[in-house]
Image (cartoon, rainbow, N blue to C red; front, side, top):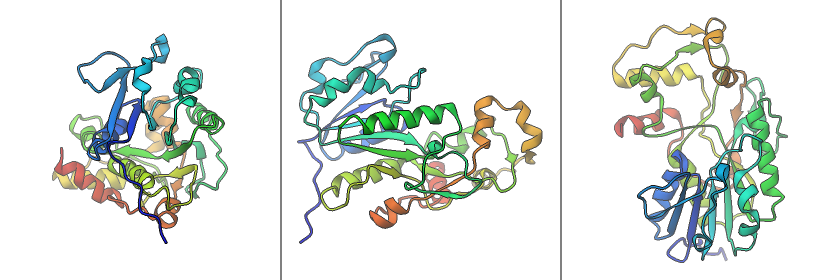
Length: 292
């Protein structure tokens, strides 16, 4: 007989380390299940559920913050030396806790460039960029930590307040055309709800330590930009060829265009059964448009 889904509720206490765009969305959503949720910040603020964690200046949370913690989600990127700030500062503390689960938000950048080919969790990472190499190093350290960790590799993240619409409105959009270039992306709501789905069904599903969270339809950046202009009722500027534009791009922007891959979500959606809220950029951007 199939076991009932695991319940998330007031017996669970989550620490969200690195409460940026994705972490904040997750914290807000998981609170709706009745869970206690504390979020880290690099400096003091007025949120009573926030605590300070700043590894750069050796400010770590008080011991009382960790009382009763059952789940941790780390959204903190590698430090300037390529190490994981959470593990560098808190690993021994975390290993003393009775944790049910630890999540780590990584990047599909660890796969490197596949010239437009598909990548899945069974593919060997081949990072091209230093930042992606650092991420892979952090993934390895988490796996070696003996903590009950699950790693989520994410492509370009967008959502209300952080999408192509903002770039258009702030006049920071660059309409660049590069033949056969595709990108994968994911709406922030699907990151949160995929993780919650896995937590609720962890007793029923085979555990996978590394999972991609991406939508169904990798596509060119031009398609996304055109769709946003259409929703806004505006005319998209004439595209600039990448070869013409590249010298004006920052090194990070250039590196963004040097990798070309499609990220498979088959493990998450076919094998594990998660149903995407926003299967493609059109559904996701419509949500952003209506909530902007």
